[in-house]
Length: 200
Image 1: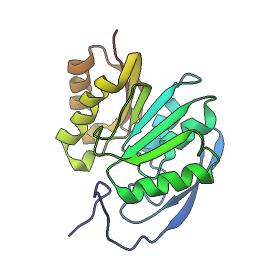
Image 2: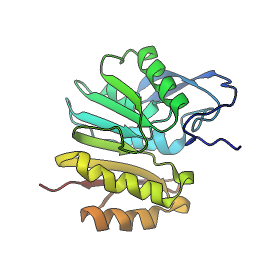
Image 3: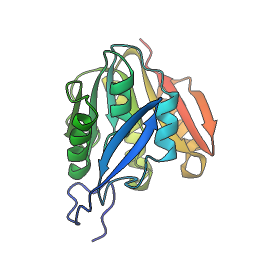
């Protein structure tokens, strides 16, 4: 059976490795492994999202499809007072995210747990971020967009990064259908970062 980064319980050898990245001007160290997304480096889409995000101090943040945790951990490390929940369907990725939160000194403000989309998510967040699992299919991606509505505070924002060739135009239309106005915050090397806000 072929394993993907959205495989729930990978059985392949872990083949752990450590990588480094400078994100938001801060150096991070991450443990990665086989059968997780972008195991060799922090991918450009995630980097662009991390550098573009506008997260208020003290915000409650949810990272959906967190992988080994670079987005949520970078937010926790560089934005004062935030608390970050990170979820992924991939058990191996979540274990790495927990380890990486400790490795980067933010374990007290980060929780990582297994969840298929929002299935295990309770509560409301000021900011939801996602580099969605494109290869899992459009239905899965759009379910992440739609499910965010129930977990965003009034005035809360959903941030999405997606490549033009991977469906950015249709994703923008779907977000507009769900939330009304869509802001394209930045576009670079074919990647688009969108922000939508949940109205009161």
